[in-house]
Image 1 (tube, rainbow, N blue to C red):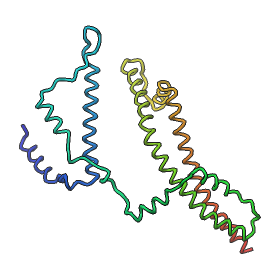
Image 2 (cartoon, rainbow, N blue to C red; image 1 turned 45 degrees about the vertical axis):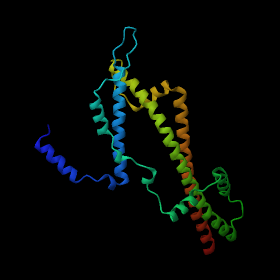
Image 3 (cartoon, helix red, strand yellow; image 1 turned 90 degrees about the vertical axis):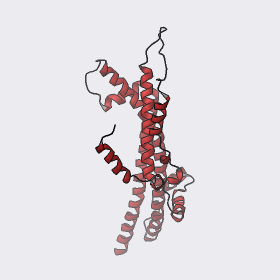
Image 4 (cartoon, rainbow, N blue to C red; image 1 turned 60 degrees about the horizontal axis):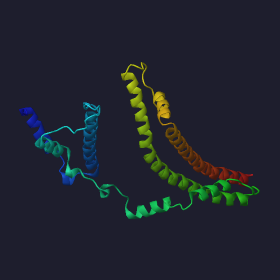
Amino acid sequence: MASNTERADAAINSLFRTAPSNRSAAQKIEAVGDQRIATMRRKAEQVKELANAPATETGKVERRKPVMPETTEKKRVARSFDPSAEISIEDMPLLPPSWMRIQERAFKLEDPEAEFNELEEALKLTDALTPGNLQEALNRAEDNARRAHRLYIVARIEYEKFELEASPIIEAMRDAASKDLQGEKDRKERSKAITEADIKGRASVLFADEWAIAMERKIKAEGMMDTLKSFAELWRQRCFSLSSMLNSGKRS
C-alpha cells in the first residue's frame, strides 16, 4: 500500500503531466520509445526464460511460456501500452511549401556520375591564361563550385541512408562477437579485458565474408564522402585562385 508521501508525490506529478491531446511530437516519440523499450525487455526476458527452461526426459528443452494469471497479465499489458503515445508521419516536422520547393531543386540531380565527370574534367585549364580566358574561367568556376557543393549534399543523403541500413547489420555482428568473448570470460577461458580490437577481430572470424564486405563498403562510402567534400572545396578554392590571377594581371 502506498505511503502518504508516495500518494502526495503522485498527485503533484499528475498536475504537471501533459494531457495526451496536447503532447508535442517529441513527447510522443519519448513515450513510444519507453513503450518499445519495455516490449523489447519483456521479449528478452522470455528468451532468457526459454533458454533456462528445464530439459525433458528426451533431452529437449520444454519451451513453454510462463503461466500467469489472466488478471495479472492484463494489468501488465495495460500498464505498458499507452494509446496516446502513438505517432504518425504527420507528427514529423516539415519545411513550409516554398522552402520545400527550393529543397527539391537543390537535391534534384538526375545523373550524379555524369555531373562528377564533367566537373572533374573542367578542373583542367587548357587555354592560354589571358585576361579574357581567366574571366571566362572564373565565371564558369563560380557556377561549378555551386554544382560541386550540390553534388556533395546529394551524396550526403545517400550516404546517410546507407549508414542507416548498414549500422544495424554491423552492430549485430559486433554484438555476437562480444557475447562470444564474454562467454569465454564467464567460463574462465579468458582473463584480460575485452577491447574494441578484440570484438572486431572476433567478428571477422565469426562472420568472415559478411564482416569483410560490410567493412569494405563502409570504408569506401566514407572515402567517397571525403572525396566529394574535398572536391567541392577544391572548386571553391579555384574561384579564389582565378580571381587572384585576374586581379594580378590587371595591376601589372
